[in-house]
Image (cartoon, rainbow over all chains, first blue to last red; front, side, top):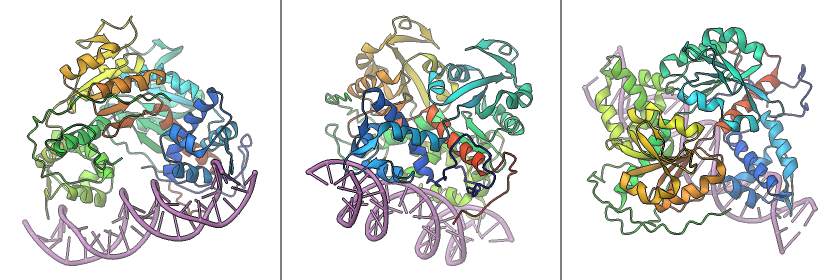
Length: 247
Length: 247
DNA sequence: ATGTGTGAAAGCATTCACAGCT
DNA sequence: AGCTGTGAATGCTTTCACACAT
């Protein structure tokens, strides 16, 4: 997947000011991928009136085991109290800081068809640290329409408009045939993070991160396990076969 | 956290399948997760007139390195010819067989709001081994509507209708607050594979597979890398700057 | 007592590099 | 020669289990 490029310079420049200059642990990628889930679970706990939480309880809410959770959190530095647990608000702040969510990042959505339209209206973006700031499409019938308060612009204007709109992340929701061209434009506009919903691989320069979401792939993975389950016992008396299931 | 599992009952039984149980390697989970991508790449190659392909070329088309590809394919048994490469049609057939895609599985979609509506119309399902066979929602304004030739039923009818419609996989596209209740119903209806788009963890009995897709999480992971990139230096940072890790 | 933080051990996954088939 | 298939080596992740702080 993404390859971490350079390390953290010993902040000579450190121009970014706003965020605390405190050091940047270099976190295992597996840990980074779980932090958002912890964050979600923490917000849920905070909303239900909790103040502190044990690793056991938080792990349950996030769907992992407690040893993993503690190890993950230990990479951020120590924010728990032995014998007590973690203070929720403190931990939320710390995770948000590490993930860079203290600044609300702008998202450009390219492709406002079926899926793209749904994404444009997805409230989860807004409530979890992001703001959709621009919409693009190649279809003249869509260009000019307003969706959720944003006008759809022609994709040819992407390179021109994206930088001004403060786009930090590009989301590709076009057909596969258009995805590479869109990725090229995003890169040309200075975007270095891309979320790709099109079923194809993208070629991008070093330093650009691409993550992919492919719905059909998820289903096919489920299909494999389904297939295996039905092939397993043959007879399989009743459910509850406690086979060693992976995952 | 309500998670009334209980009432699993319903015998999945249905031993009808005559797939040979013997030819089932137990594949590493990481390999299973990549097979769908190989399959997509193979179809692409087949469509552009290719007949055989080397591990190097297929790996490039799938976005992995060739050693990994060969190792993955070796788990399925040997389907390549040394000195030549892989015969594409043969490999497609083999992967489809292993993933259980020879039978087109039925998908029930629960939650036909913004996202669910888009999923109902997503062509990628149909073209890659699945068929949406039922739609459910709790909103009376949506129940009764026809989307893509399917009538939206009330979610309370799920347990009654799903088995008859041949549902093998359930897709949850409801708000998080409803997701667990829907999961319980799917389980009660005998569904043992669930794809969850709601931002929450689901409690399900052993033997039920859940995969989760959370769009905000993907963005947050990208945010982390973005954050780190901008902490490293100005913003210019031309690629190719592979640096040694700090210490 | 209780529950975090963390070395050490175990388990997976990826990469290397080359033997062996065509 | 060219390219697959695969043991061996490396690196990463998870799990264990317990010292240590409160």
